[in-house]
Length: 581
Image (cartoon, rainbow, N blue to C red):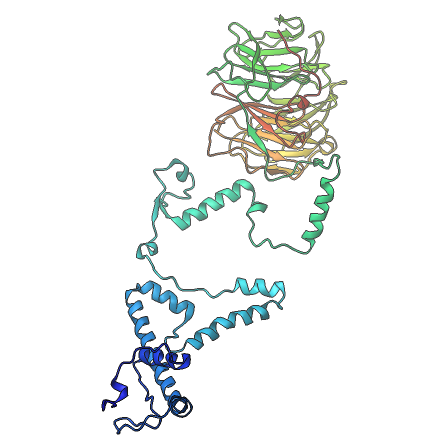
């Protein structure tokens, strides 16, 4: 007999003889807790009707109950999925939830929307593939800028940097009020110092350097260049202006230090030797290597503080005069003998100090008192003749061909004499000069430089000095403010060195023919040059030497002169190295 309890309230165990489709429907109903009526035509709460056969139940009751059961099942499944999602999101940190919203968007109720969003980038990638490379670069450059997630309030406050307690920063102060600078201002100041030292922005520091279509051609040329051998490097025929490539070397007299003033420093005309002489009564010879500069020999002259020492034109002799003696010492370097010249017949000078040697090695010119110039034979040391100017002689020099003598007077006038006839060829006033101090001529016979007591150096053309009574200077160099005591042209007539012994660091190198001063020499921050009394260039301008009052013979190495590297020092001298004993 059948029970009166409705079948919807009963729990059935799975029957192994039940068809598979019916067993699947039973499991789904249990999962969603929905139990549809298994009797055909049964109503909720109504009286049970007579059950039909199993085949009739499958064919009649199930098709009518399936749509409602599926919809109820889907709603219940979405509800459970949402509940589980909310439970999982409760355990997630806020940063992770924010990141998911940025990546996947707010698609809590619609997973199809998420799937549509994930399909969009694939379509955009296919569309972007048709764009040109230029458009892609433009899109990359204009990416939307996102706001920072977190800001530090301390970053907005400008941190000040102390400029007084740091010796490197102290040199960058433009005035006394800049005791402190912000980091941004200090960075700008450092950039300005670097660009000033480099003469502008280097090529490697330039920004926005895009590759052009011609770069492919240049790469092909480079590949072709690497497949061939030969000399592809050529040096410039002229010295560029602005920045001078120089390197600080070991002092020339480092192996014989002294505290007495250096009065003369000169490079040997044919050997790798530099001579240093000073008020310590000694003439020293050093071999030039730029690293240690080993000492070759020292000649000590008792009670003879040296006023000037100079090599002969052939480099076989050294002549030296004192500050308070009329004796002229001649040192024969090949024989190793010291020959004093006590008296020159016809020369009535009580003190012999300043002198010049002609470039061809034939004459010796001694500057006397009362405006006299005495011309001697370099070979015999005998007097040939004398020349007289008005006033006192401040300085004198030979022309490059040794046929003329230029003399600067204490009245600001310049005299030009003929050596053979000893007659005055021309006389003119140095423009703006009240008192002459120095004079020099270039090796190529083109320029004459005159230094005055007001710090001005006038550069003349030699032809105008011979032909015009009132020549105009080509250029007036006004980079010194004290009297110009030293003038020296380099052998290639590309540099004019000017210096004053009355002010520290007062030395400048003038570029020719632009007549501009090299901005990177001297390095004022180091302040190791002090007062300069003498200077000279090596035979091919590879070295530049300075003598100061502290007893140091400073030496600098230049790489522009010969287009070679530092180890190739021997090529800077025209002949082989002579070692003297």
